[in-house]
Length: 404
Image 1 (cartoon, rainbow, N blue to C red):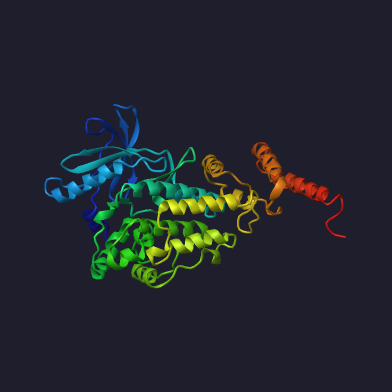
Image 2: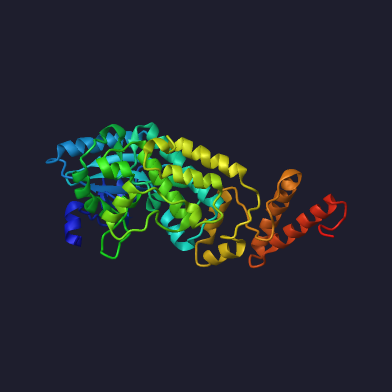
């Protein structure tokens, strides 16, 4: 599809620096493009802080039906109050566009972090997606289906908080009318171009990659369609690959409808059994077999994280590998994300420590963490914790060696 044809379908409203939206929001710079339009960084003259404005091109005079529906959905979105969802502040309507004024998040997207590091720890993945699931639960509580959960639409604040953004494709749950398979096949090529991932044929996968099979078959969707997208996110973060290998978009859609999703453990050996089970169930072709709410998904992650050992023995991601992966990444953001996820170190030489001595090791590890930050290249925690555990085991055996 040519760039010109795409712009006809989703025209971009260009606003110059200094342009004022609704006599209140002064445009400072262009941020990027979302599913439904351009996003600009603006300054709220009245409240005196920065906001983001999504500019949705719409002919209000000649498309009253779409305009009314858009405003109805925006009012619903405005009711969402969650620390894991970008706040909607205002909605401005002009003759050329509708401006959705939302919270500006200084940071980067989950896709940016993933592109930089490629391999993320199990605990960090769980913590990020737990927050995404809690944000989705708040959205679903207002009767809204997001419909565009993907790496690009998960923002990581510089403080380590995780927030869902971009409601460009969201709809009230009751508006998810079922369409025929032929109509959906006709639309697949159009909707799929909203994303940013391009195949060899020049077709962008984007949204289709995260679509639930039920939406591809009949066009129907509900909150469990977002659960499927969560499963795709989980699989992608665990394995650094798509759920299905495919030749083109139609092949991808066919596999999503006809084939069961593979286990992430085939590509990520350190994936816990409980996390594998959550991922596989979330990617079920039958919505009734998925977690029935985003809260269920978040609770499963929370329970699983509590069962994880303080010190993980992972053949996939050890401390040195993590440092190699983040050599050119934003260390400050990465550190805050790890701390926000109840930071855990990777020690390939030390087996998981449980029982009575676990609090002792946790205390020592926390102290050594701050010391190690001063001499980052030296794996100090690995060495000292190994000595500590060895001493504990030696004392527990009455001073006798482990082997005769």
